[in-house]
Amino acid sequence: MERVCFRLQVKPELMPEYIRRHTEVWPEMLEALRQTGWTNYSLHLDESDGTLIGYLETLDLEAAKAGMGKTDVNARWQAEMGQFFVELGDKAPDEGFLRLKEVFYLA
Image (tube, rainbow, N blue to C red; front, side):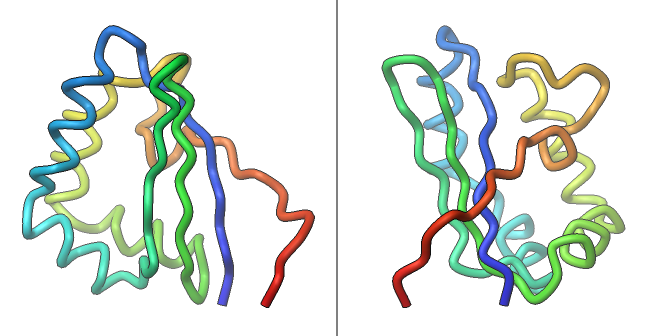
């Protein structure tokens, strides 16, 4: 199982709406994540500066991302959520995040 941690930067002025959207994640998006192997997935937001840390476990991150890439719901979600982040360029959030290196794990 891969343990994946990543970072994104939420625009400070959009943090309240970003939080609201994640209290109402579409049921079909949640199901797509489960079906494509995203497990133990959580997001943590530093409300002082908009730093967003995500964590998930999956058998294969690239396969999980590819599976989501084939779903209509993911395309719609990424299109809506892209506006919330700083410096993604032309990438969707699920492609533009910075994966962080694991340096310690207590099993």
